[in-house]
Image (tube, rainbow, N blue to C red; front, side, top):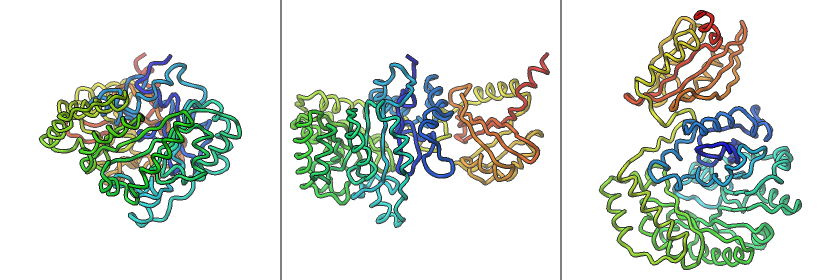
Length: 478
């Protein structure tokens, strides 16, 4: 078995409402898309270079390619509190020929406007709060035809949203599973507002495990957070879902998104899950920042911990007891060792490099490529300075200043010609590497881009080298 800090890239695919594909729902790193001119087949995405690069980074215990959130959570609350922990079950035999799990958020159709959500995941927010047109449907017949190859190999499917029971795309997959007689684990994260004969049919036939989001125990709290919900009807539906889930024999989960506005209700929530003998889950919200409990001033967070610790909880179920302990441990750990989560571009590394490490990297690049790297520096994502060696004059890099660092590849394309990109293995933790092939009027040029964060200034730095020089160092040495 390959050892990896996370087995998500080795075993799973996550599909977003906008058609982008990731290894899991928390990574910021896109490995492909199923829409538009850059569309790839599911097979090509699974076997592609982007996913391979993310696998290899994690096998080197590096979280630099879009995996900062799990690194942050592991440092502040332990590995068992991370999303990565849930993929350990798929470690044996990794990487697999086919995904073992699909995480499907195929549609943003939703009837609620939860305060911590956004228009990318809720059509109601997009049209009513943001005043934007609905997102287009991204999953067409070709997607479902390609999916057929993957379905027999799956051990687990997770359906999210939006509201999964409103998505026609999900129903199409559920019908196909029933038609093929396949019986993987099926979980559905739902807001619990919809319960009818059709919903009951799917829960029963697929032995679904409903995961119902609650986020409060007082009706006023639930309705203030999950805007559009009727708290009384929600609990009535929870009763129906639980009865059906117990009949199907696959259990049910209640989930609670922990925020400054509802932390006093997390203990009553755990008590209710315990009373119902249900699995439960407490999620620390980190975006938007005003809903991040761990961003409270230290004095306030200390008071939160003291109040939550002072209540004696006579919980009998393992899940509520473990959940209670994890909440207290996560807050305590953050107070003792505060770690800031940087929610940023997929290209941003999570571990800044000091000047000594940067000097080592620069020397390594000079030795390997026999040229001084071009250095691009950015403040808050905007290019503010650039050092251009003679070999890089063809790039027209003076145009980069004032532009978005995240759009560096597009700036090169506009200036020099069509490009293709490929993720590469980093020689050093804290550095993200991208290969860029540029088709110019005079031929094809190969660039390698090494991106990092400077520990002293906090600025983003990019070293660019001419990969065509890779053989010259050895030649000159001989």
